[in-house]
Amino acid sequence: MKTKSSQDFYLVLATVGVLFAISLICIYGMFYFKIAEIQQVAPAEKLRYMNLMNSAAIPFVAVLVLLLGVCIPKRLFPPKWLNIFAIVLIVLAGGTASWFGARTAVLLILSASLVLQIVVLVLAAGGSRLPQFEKSGYWVRVGSSLVHLGLILFVFDLLLYRYTFLHLFLFWITAVAFMAGMFFCFYAHNVVRLITLIKMRRESSSP
Image 1 (tube, rainbow, N blue to C red):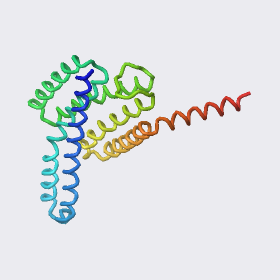
Image 2 (cartoon, rainbow, N blue to C red; image 1 turned 90 degrees about the vertical axis):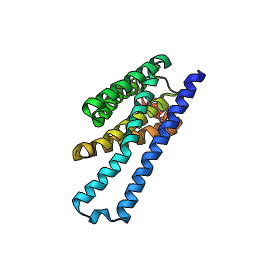
Image 3 (cartoon, one colour; image 1 turned 90 degrees about the horizontal axis):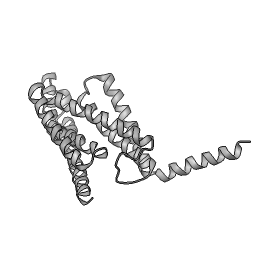
Image 4 (cartoon, one colour; image 1 turned 120 degrees about the vertical axis):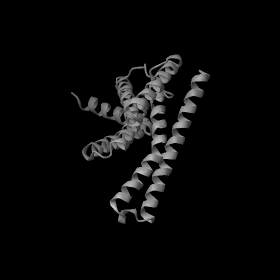
């Protein structure tokens, strides 16, 4: 139990650190874009700047994807199987990157993480006790699953931003998943009270 708690702590710490680094790159890129008036330079120079910012963020996005690939299965697998899964995932990602490029490898890991997270969300929404969560409570488990789902879709959106329709679709799905997940996590007791109140009113109004 102590080992699992330590593993969870380091996974969370690493994820927060990577997200913080990506945030700094985004903030720097936006301010520099405004201050240097990049919007007024030639299209080729603007494209070079955007590619430079993307190149700076790619290593952190790749690490974030690998962390997601390990963090999400830990809700379904015991520590022993999780370690095996992590090794297989890293080897598979490395092989895919060598043959088809880093972008394809990232999309592959994201796709696997998305499928697993959907499984976790369905199990949590169905009331199953199979997924392992740090905190108990139905709505907290559902909220946590939605937040993780939103995080995966957020990275998908970063990689597929060039496809306008898909970008907007992923953006709104991500926003809804994040907001609903945070609401269920922080206001789980209020949700329970509201549902109980609705049930009581229905029972009192029924003949």
